[in-house]
Amino acid sequence: MKIGLYFGSFNPVHIGHMALANYMVEYSDIEKLWFVLSPHNPFKRRSSLLDEYQRYQLLNLATNDDSRFEVSNIEFKLPKPSMTIDTLTYLVEKYPQHEFVLIIGADNAEGLKKWKNAELLLSKYSFLIYPREGIVLDNIDIPNYQIVDAPQINISSSFIRQAIKNKHDVRFFMPESSYQYLKEMHFYEK
Image (cartoon, rainbow, N blue to C red):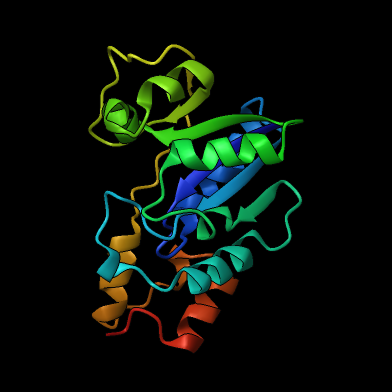
């Protein structure tokens, strides 16, 4: 089975994440999409992260048992900060029957050479690259990639966190079940 791996902090998950995931399973050649929740992305401040198990719960609520999606907490068991190559090595060993494709934004495609063992990533895996506002990908130095013309939804988790802190209503920026849980638990209010 061809599986798209969508890595992220999902801090919190929002409609942009879900719309992109839906687009990928409907308009690319992947058969399923796994949300790989990163407990600690090396490029982000740990202090701004909601507890990983709470983010995992929000993401599970967002996917709502949709059979096209799976939420993975595989990185919870791996050394932190999370490194994509380490996670992929583990997944390939555990699921040799699957072919894994990385789903990344154009902003990440630009900085891919800075990732741990980038040469190995580039030689072994293919990439589905989705557009990001302000990023023009003229010269992509990735051997096996496809640019996916997914719609851009300019919303970010940091926007949602700030809006909640400032007591704004964000209910339409998130999947309803995730929003209800977030509100009930008073996440990001302080």
